[in-house]
Length: 234
Length: 234
DNA sequence: CAAATGTAATGTGTATACAGTAATGGATTG
DNA sequence: CAATCCATTACTGTATACACATTACATTTG
Image (cartoon, rainbow over all chains, first blue to last red; front, side):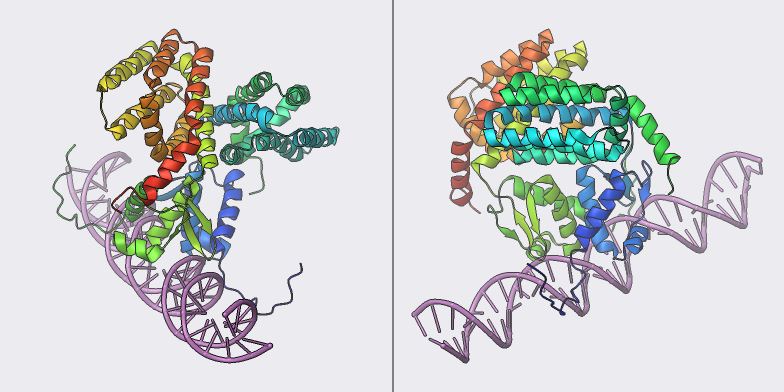
């Protein structure tokens, strides 16, 4: 289905909001805004070559997503970074994934479960790599795949929101975790429960698996702060 | 700290967004928009005596809250109403509250737990009433109070979002539930677990307590639809 | 008469203007 | 020299204007 050479595609700048939302969300996910920094609307608008109107609409969305806070007459501020905040996010993630796993064991079809296992087996064959971004991406996909089996779109949506909020820390966490090993085995055990459809056991494993990560919250945010303020071109 | 009589309080119309957000959210919570209905921005703006700009900002927020969906070049549509959607929300609520209860048992101080119990005892003394809105409000407050003990602001925030999305159904659910009795006893059992700080048992009770509600999702949405389309002045 | 086409009316998308509020920096005063 | 005050600057909040997209409806066509 090619785009049949329609030259009338001068097209208005519509969809600016979506573009701005995606772009600014990306900046926020990667902490290109310093924690607590005030976001200047005109600067952002000129940088993205749009007016303030779509920028403000996007910022309003991002505020509800948890990436911005908003103070009337002062504007939008980038999210903070604190160990407590990170731990809270991991705890929420654990709560969602635990429940979703139990539902997945009830509702996933045999075919879906088999497919999920197959995907995991492929992705875990990354071999020894130092591309932690890829590792984190695969890890996130693994957990998302399980939650999809729960057939609960609301949980999936909530988890995706949490995931984008912790993505920055998850990379750091996985690096140090992988050094300590264990992640692979934990996933393997979870997969085995899924195969047996043992929702209770697997749910507990997932919860512990995630809670282990949350226990590093302090170190992870320390390392995160360092990267935000020192470790990049900017 | 009184507001020292500053007559210069002609004040600009600022804060329109907050006002519009609250007003439209209220409308959405109560399903004053018919399910799936397209929301007309100019009509809403004139009704609230503001321009389209703050209206759109508020609608963008509400979209992220789950009250609106958005289709580029077509605008905002009110959420629709389906049994599956309601059940998903109840499942998410159960997931959050179960995990939060366990944390509450670990983190709540003796004083906080005692206070929570006291508040519940007061509120359960409503006696025989037919003001289901009040009953639902007390129920929501009871569950919120427990989650507050978890000291996890993110979970609290997520739960509040879910609560506002299901408030309409919760009232209906409680009516039929109360007729069947049981709600009081279930809360009492949960409270007892909290007093003993038995997070595992109480968590399971909460989950079952909520899951029981979710099982009525179909009937509840049927009744809800009837009320939306027939049962009110409009 | 049904389907297709053109056109008017309705409504969204974004830029811009202007009013009002907070932030800044220098002058003034103790 | 420090604190306060005032003027200036920078930025936010909302209304409005206009371009574009969609929808509804009447007209034409097979």
